[in-house]
Image 1 (cartoon, one colour):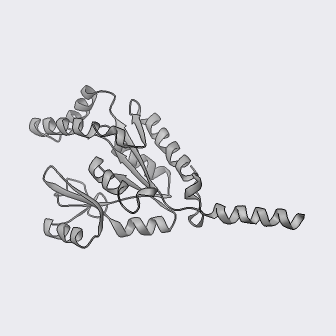
Image 2 (tube, one colour; image 1 turned 45 degrees about the vertical axis):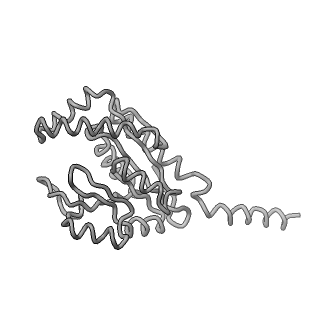
Image 3 (cartoon, helix red, strand yellow; image 1 turned 90 degrees about the vertical axis):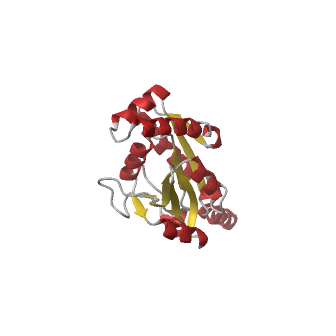
Length: 218
């Protein structure tokens, strides 16, 4: 998927949300691998790293006082508390990417998505919600991870239904019956959104040049 060069457009903020286990993380990784014009928004969090996670890659792992200080200084574009841990998206890397014509991908829940849509950068948001094919399949995927207790799985299923209730707030909603097909649809959405007139400010000057060319030929 070819991307327009930096001077030709502003970067998008692509929000990808879904219940845990519905496939958004897999789709996000594939999208990032396929398109160098998209960067991942690495969230700050107060939760402890899981095995294999690296600070600055999956998350910026910080203490709760440090996170709260970031909120006070206005350094986070969005933030929320999930299962007792704080999560948020650092603002500066996002703004720099937008100015450079690069898109930023967010793997966040509906609360974070709502905050970004309501922010000063809300006009640049493209939001996509991924639904599971069924709740039974979602539970099967969560159990298949082999990482969580019965209590945690029950909590995640309850939270999943709360997440699903916000589906209508998103620009696009996809049912992830097949991950390859869903990934292709997400990539198509991003490509089309990049071509919107309002996201290509260079068109103003181009149309003026066409007008001058026409007048000179008369």
